[in-house]
Length: 215
Image (cartoon, rainbow, N blue to C red; front, side, top):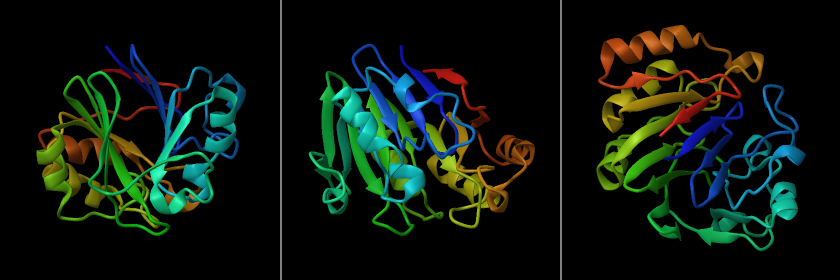
């Protein structure tokens, strides 16, 4: 069993029986974060989708406190000492039956997404991205069951694009992220949930910061 905890914005903590994996730990500047940096303990791996402050966030400090591995794209290694570099298309085995694969994203700052596979269940964190047609290939390659998609618009895809992305990915569950943190990315998640139900086969799961999803 694994648990997916939402920490606001695009930050998630994935707890498994072997590893605790933190994704895009924007904590200090995140008004919605239900935790503080000092409360994030026993973090084994930190995944960073790109170098923007609201994604790289507090990764370096948390890694230092926990002796965590930071996994990021090769181009970000100069800013993150002792990181484990990857590139798009690569896969790393983190522990028995737990893998992370780096996939493309369309954004600035050398952005990527990640698929974490836990005992064959694929969890796709899209990072900051616009919609792109190869999202369907990501699902076919990595058997995505749960998709974490940005919906705020302006800097990423918005609600309607996320609905179409869900159609291509065809996950069992879709979780929205990267919204409401600032006024320009405020959205109505009720509209998102309704459209997902009407136009896709996925189940929408709108998580509040502090919520967890049992996987």
